[in-house]
Length: 250
Image (cartoon, rainbow, N blue to C red; front, side, top):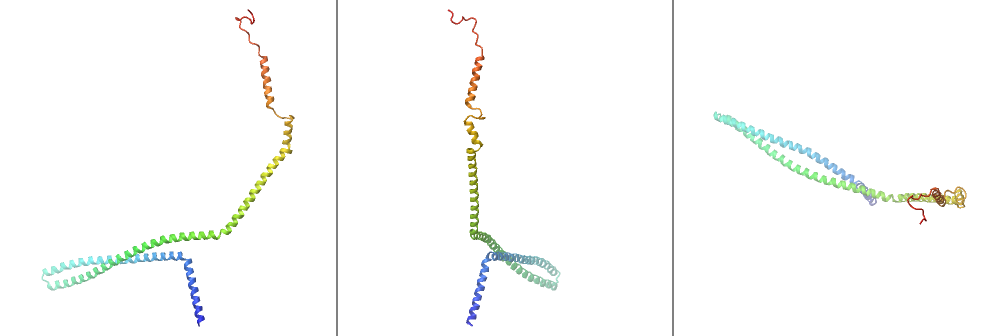
């Protein structure tokens, strides 16, 4: 019997732990649902309040009607007294008393309705203020929970992300290594062509003055000087003026 009791206690403990776990995992959702139900309750309270306000207005209208009835029957009673109709005046007075009793009951009801309306409005305003506060707290709780979930997701995915980033870095290094190797091969090909190719042969011929070496600066300058000397030889000597004696005469 003792073992069976302990088993039941253990089962109750497990159920409690499961219930607490469910509540903890859905705390934000439960909080939001409680706010939603509170807003629904306030909406119902407002509808009930409109019924009380309608009854208060009806009581006020009934009071105004009874006031008019009392005034009208008082005039009737005065007219009966003027005609010495004592019995009729007494009956009218009794009816007036009934009207006044009914009016007093309506006044009492109207005052009670007004008091209920005042209290209900104050309660509704207080509840709405608290709901707005809870809604602000809910928004903060949702944002905080989102941040926690994002942080947890980043933390749990760091291992796989690190391996993926490592693989990407390795691929990038291999690409850079291949580009470096290609650049070295291109420079080596240029060096071989300069040493053994046609460009090297043309350079050797030009250094020996063989082949189409192109115009050199010395040849161009010599050609220009020869052209200038030829032009000076072809120009006739300038004639001496007639009024001057020949050179060397006394």
